[in-house]
Each structure stands twice: as structure tokens, then as C-alpha cells.
Length: 385
Image (cartoon, rainbow, N blue to C red; front, side, top):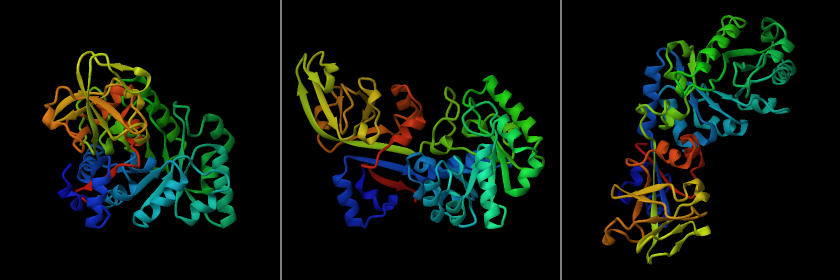
């Protein structure tokens, strides 16, 4: 960890405090804003003429929307999405006032005035949300903007056939709002040959005919790479923007955004047969050198990595030895020369030798979960701010 770069990396602290915060930190999370820019540009090129939205939910996948949203706005991003209204309210002052923000979960009962007050629009997912939004517009004496989501087979959110039937002809109820676009969400886009992709595209095409003239949005991160038939007018990449591979099993076209280095707290030698960690899940099979690092599941490093995960020291892979604890992890560093291992040394958890998708595979999950769990106790710096 090179302290000399901290002030250039975009820390909001004064220089003296940066050094102090760095010294006190158990781990350093670096977010590469140039990688965000490069990923956005790649997605924009891949999407052809479609508008590329910025997905800010879960604090920009755990990486900090306060720093990332302005970067995307400067790149020309004009449409942003959050999951919750409170996320959208926090986002509003971070980007220019003329950029649109849509809340994917739609309006919870009684929240219409909050949407309007902050210049935020909902995605309407069912007949009840549509009726509430129409009623709010009538009360305020104007048509309120919203996106319309239809379910094309994922059965999670979006208007079902029953919702559409209950609302009646779209030509009638759409006159009572200011519809921005029609959207749906792909369930299996990360598997390019999955039959659900073609099935959902066909269903979306059929439903789209009921909303003539309305711009459309279907593609998520992986959908952007399924071809132009899925692009329509707006694409909504999230994971790919943050470096996660949109098509697992293929070469990742995206640049890694996050790097995580944890500091060694203690080093000890243990004898053959020694127990390491909670639950006695690791037993030394000979003399071993164990290093304890200052990251644990309270920082989002998954407990499922117990005896399965790895870290890197000087590019050499070292295994997790025992249970991932709340605040610490024990590593078997026996393969590293003794003179290289000491308290304060940085150990790579995410970086050039270990991508977020690789960590996810070790934990039996997906890169989305690894990123969005990254905690608040890291010292964070933003490279290329």
C-alpha cells in the first residue's frame, strides 16, 4: 500500500489526516474511476445508439455513488436508477438537475409527494402503483413522469397480464401520467444461449405493441452483449459497469474497478497438529506460519470462504486457514519467506491476481454479492479522480 498516492487518489480528508487514516486502517479499498469511465464507454459502444443508464443501487454496488455518479454524469449519462427512494434522494444532489432518476421498486404507499419534491420518477410495477401515481397526478393537477415495467417471465416485478387487464387499455390510463419508457428485465442474460432470452424478447415485443411510440428498455449488463435486438432505446448495465464479467465462462471485457488490500496484524509459528480459528476447522499438518489479517465477515468478506478462499502476498497465493471471523482471517503464509511477513504488510484480497468473480466462485456465490457486501471500515481511496 503506497501512502504517497493517497492525496492523489481522491480522499476527501486533509493530507495530514489522510496519512493518519491510512496508518489506522486495517484495510485499503481502492476504486479506480478510470476503470468506471472505460467500462461505461465500452458499454456505450456495445449498445450502439441506445442510451446507457447508470445503476446506482446499493451505493453503486458498494463502491460509493457519491464519487461514481458524478463521473458517469460527466461521461454523458443522462438516466440513473436506484432500487429505493431514499437512495434516489441521496443521489439527486450528486448529479445535474436535468438527469433523470428512476426508482426500480416504484412508489411505496404515501410516498408520491417525496418523489415529486425531489424530481424523481418511479418505475410502475403493478396496477396498484399505477393507480396511486395517477391519483397523485390528479391531486397535483399535472401528469407525473414514470416508467412502466412489464413482466416477461421473471415473475419478480413488473405488471402481470392481470395487472394490465385491471388497468384497461393503455391508451386510456397512460394519458393520466407522463410515460417515459416501457421496460422489462431479463432473467438469464448471463447465459447467452438460454432459451429464456428469446422467450422474454418475444413476450416483450408482443407487449410493446400495446404501447406504441413508447421508448423501450430490456437489456441489463449481460443483455447488452446479447446483440442489437435486445438494446432498444435504453440499456441498464449495473454489474458490468463495476467490472463483473457479464458472461461468466468467457473472457471478461470489463476492467476491474475495485482492489482490496488487508494488513497483517500478527504472525505466528504453529506446530504440527495445532488448531487455528473458531470451530477447530483447520489443523496444521506440520509446522506452519499463520498470518492474521484485519478483515472479516463484518467487512463483507464472506464466511463461506472459510478454508476455501485465498489471498496473495508478492503474487504468491496463500490459503485461508480456518474460519473467517468477524474482524479477522487467518492465512497460511508458510510459502512466503519469513523476512517478507510482518505486521503492517499489505495482502491482496482483490486486485491483479484475484478478480471479484474468482472470489465469488471460491465462496459459491456471484460477484454482485462480493462487491455489495464490502464494508464501511476500509480506508477508501478513489484513483484517477
